[in-house]
Image (tube, rainbow, N blue to C red; front, side, top):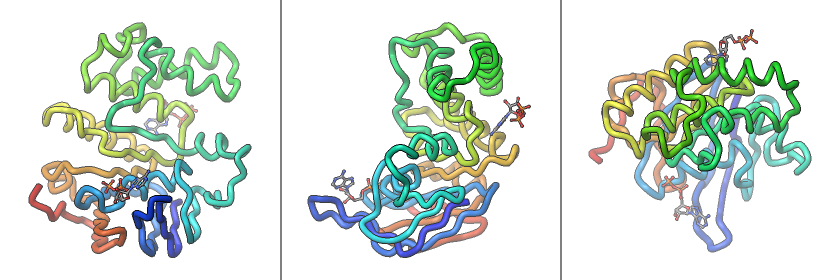
Length: 228
Ligand code: ADP
Ligand code: ADP
C-alpha cells in the first residue's frame, strides 16, 4: 500500500526533515505517527500525497511511484488518497454539501450520482441533517467531519491525516477518532500524525515514532511514549 525506500528530504533552506526513511504499510492498517515537534512527521505525510518531493529515495502509494508521477497524473494519485488536516481546510463560502461535492466534481461524475454519493458520505460521518450549513455555522468537530467526508467521497484506498484532532477538545477528539476507526474497519488504510497521547495509548495500534528525521520506533500495538 505505502512503501518508502531510503527516503531523504532536505528543504531548500537546508533543513534535513527526513534522513533515510524505510517503511512498509500494508492495506487495511491503522498507523499512528508520533514524535516531537519538528521531527519530520508532516514531511513524512506530505511525501505520500506528493505535496513535497523527496530529495532522494523511492515512494510507492497504491502502486504509484509517487516521486516519478508526472504533473498531469497527480490528480489521479490524489484521488486514491484522502487527506485530512488539523485546520480542516474547508472552503468558507461553500456549504457542507458543496465542500464535499467540489471534491467529486473534479472527476466529472454525472450530476445525479454525485448528489447521492455526497449525501451518503455526509450521512456516514453523521452530518445528514447539516448539508446546507456553512463551515462557520458548524462546530470544530462538525467541520472536521465535513473534511473527512470530503476525503472519503472518492473512495480512496488510504486516508492520511495530519493532527486531525489538534484543534478539538478531548471529547470531540474521541468522536473523530472513532470515526477514523470505523472508516478503517471498512478496509481503508489510515495513517495519522498525532500528539494525542491518551488516544494513541488506548487504541493500541501500530505506532511509528520519528525523531530527528529518522524512524526510531515501530511497534505493532504501540504506545505514545512521550510526556507531552
Ligand atoms: P513535524 O511535523 O514533526 O513537526 P515537520 O516535517 O513539519 O515536522 O518539520 C521537519 C523539519 O523540517 C523541521 O526542522 C522544520 O523546520 C523543517 N521544515 C518543514 N517544512 C519546511 C519548509 N517548507 N521549508 C523549510 N523547512 C521546513
Ligand atoms: P458502493 O459503491 O455500493 O457505495 P462501497 O463499498 O464503496 O460500495 O460503499 C458501501 C458503503 O460504505 C457506502 O455507504 C459507502 O458510502 C460506505 N463507504 C465507502 N467507503 C468507505 C470508507 N472508506 N469508510 C467507511 N464507509 C465507506
